[in-house]
Image 1 (cartoon, rainbow, N blue to C red):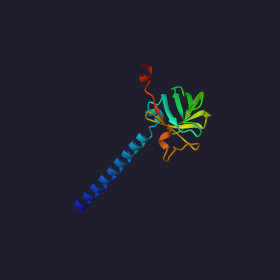
Image 2 (image 1 turned 90 degrees about the horizontal axis):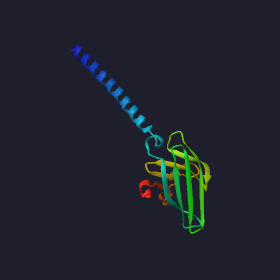
Image 3 (image 1 turned 120 degrees about the horizontal axis):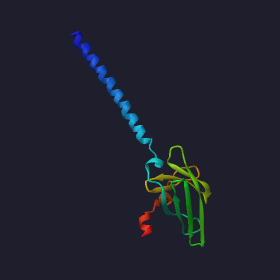
Image 4 (image 1 turned 90 degrees about the vertical axis):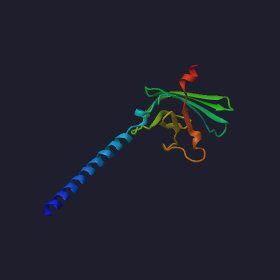
Length: 149
């Protein structure tokens, strides 16, 4: 009887250790998957456009092109005014590979969070803009095939 109890105890301990080991491997895989970032996993290069709010005009049409060589070109057209601002330069990724920062502060627009076919304009602290008008600070990727036709 003592031998059966001893064998069952050993089996229970063995299965417990195996399940803990499996759990650690599973969590490791999950952390590796979450380690992927926009820079590596998203087709981020291309042209994005959107209308952002303007304090003294009808809106600002922003168009920004991000290139694989970490350069950009940006145009801001102020609707209702006869003013357009164009700039170009370089950008760099944050350590997590999810946010780009422009080398020039163009009218306060310096940081963008990169998503799948989307750029979120970030505030000066690098946070996503929230609240009732948050969706007005989003630039969407333009399909180049449509533009070329």
